Image (cartoon, rainbow, N blue to C red; front, side):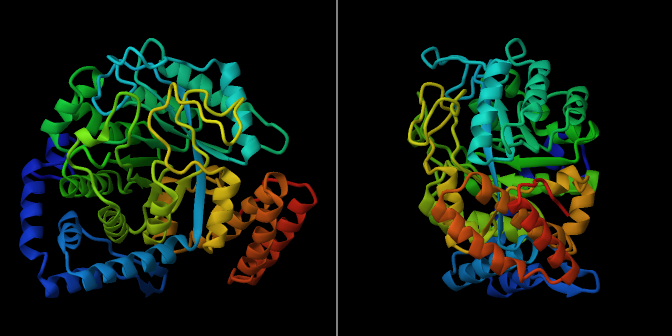
Length: 482
């Protein structure tokens, strides 16, 4: 029985509710009156507190996703862009993954790190190697990392993860510093989540892979990850362990996308109902080719147009949640979807253990890759590309460091007030990148963009202060924030 307030996975992700939702969506996919009502409900509206959005239920959003009327799809895209602009503006937050270890005891059939893969090289970074990777990432200009590791209680215990986090935060090379470490590791205990919180992590990220229980168990035939309930209930344990920000995601291509879409939104509704705050981020990875993994054997793949529509509908349904698209996707695909709701992207990513230190921008180790990277541009190239499209590449971590996380972040975001902090912070961190890491061509474009965007800060005091901070950054000072 569906119950978003339940702490049992099969009650807040209820299979029958999803099936009923998909049937309802199919029956109403050409119901123009209903679709117009849903779109009207989701529009941003000005209030005394700022700009607000109601969002949509999983059932309402599923109707939009099922709708195949071209002009209605265009209305969805237009609304998604409006919502994205209202709450995130033209800022795009930058990050990179850091793979610590590919030792894993699970047998996930879609991942090359699975335990039965005997020909992939197994590697675990020492703390000295972690430090070298961090220096390499800092020398690109990164300030925010997402650490990744396979599930292996012997090789990758929580103590190893905590030691790596401590090492990452300790490295200060030239003007570089990693200011936020997000963590993408296997489902664990409340006690271990508390340890991660005490270590100063940003967001805890865990992809569900698929919300379809039967498919989930087949895709994870052995290992701790086989336990559907333990995995699905991980975010509740993380929040019980005092982690404010959690990130959801499914691996599109494993199961029917409409089922995954409904399950993903039901999970977000559950977190809001139980904890008073939904997911900080939602990621939308698609299955990609990797060592001994052929994505064509999974018959639920989605094309770029469907992928774009999923992103737009998620943005409309959960207007305040950050959305992430990684370098799994090509430049052309990211160009297509970024305006529809994406607020974070990775840049110059390597999915190999030890993939950064000792390699040039053009060199890529493949022996320990988790998946193929489609967008292989350098961080400088990605930053320049974003600016040419009119976006502000942001390396900001101020909200995390000022304690604006969880419900505090969401309360600001829900009234649009977060932009009073984020816009100048984005410009200041971009200025740091231009001063320390950018190519001359990128600097030229960036300086013009900063000058233009400073004028858009509505508060005169904030605009003056941001201008002063940016001048100080040019003089060699660092790490200013609102």
